[in-house]
Length: 145
Length: 139
Image 1 (cartoon, chains in turn orange, cyan):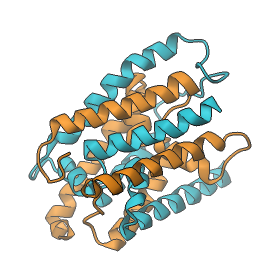
Image 2: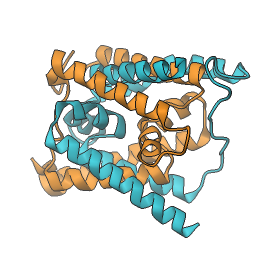
Image 3: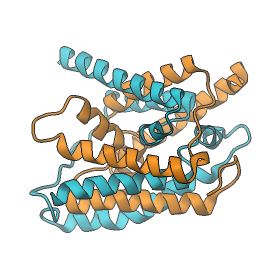
């Protein structure tokens, strides 16, 4: 695994394939969309009978993260931004994914694979505003670094 | 039982995939979004790999009456483009560019116990709960 800021097409493709296979198991076996913001949001205030699989999927994410933290901790670095920016970012991601019904996984992977028009528009939109935000942060604040 | 095990194992595989792909390194994510700077296109390959793998199974699922372990598919039938979709996606993108985290990698990275990551996930939950109550209140 490459952990520096270098070009990693093979590792990134391989990781992507694992993500796609995980989403496929959730869809073909359980009939669910592996959209993380939706799974997380739904687990925060669950409806009866709809919490169990969400909690187990989230436990799986944390367990997988735990394995990575033990085996290859460099693969998980904290955000380079100051804490107040990270907090603001978290709120915006929460508000935005709730309003827009999805994030990089639900829209960007699952929705696009199903050729959903909503997901294609959502993905183009968050890629665009994400790029603009990074640009503005660099020009105005030097990326806070 | 089978559904629970599927969810648990899918979560593990999803997390490992995110970590191998580089998505759990916010500075790499920011580098991917930095088209005007030292652009690192690696993370475009995550989408290539993920969509490439999922596209086939998504088509397969469309041809199935029910999933193998459940009574039905929990898929949205919404097709209309509307303001909440675009506004929400736009706000999400701003947050993604600011912090370098989207929801999946942030939750996975909680295992590192880094304060910034824990703060991000907490703030994300607050954002979701607040929006939910506002949307419900307005409806």
